[in-house]
Length: 130
Image 1 (cartoon, rainbow, N blue to C red):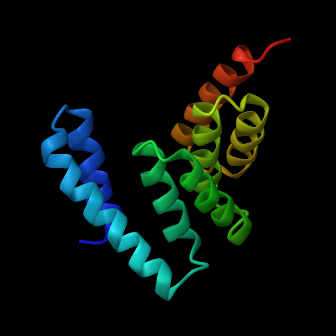
Image 2 (cartoon, one colour):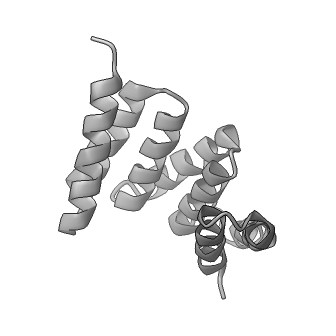
């Protein structure tokens, strides 16, 4: 299984409160993403995957660097823009989060994606000071 599959399984276990099971998977996924990026440093999928994983692990500064590289490398990647929006929302950078969510929304193809992004955008815009 690739790093994205291990990361997804780790996220699911962590959300179920099974951190002891999740941690090894997430650390293995982290190492695998990093190793693959050594071979393909501009792969936007790897950059976004690592950035999302680092966000989940609370390493927000590191995550931001990877997610910014991902959207620069692939500006039409809805998932990368969405992940960047989530990160900026966590960092309370609400105008920047709104901008990232707007870009993701413009690229979203599926109705469920659009609905999720509209909800996140409304949440961020509702929290911004007027």
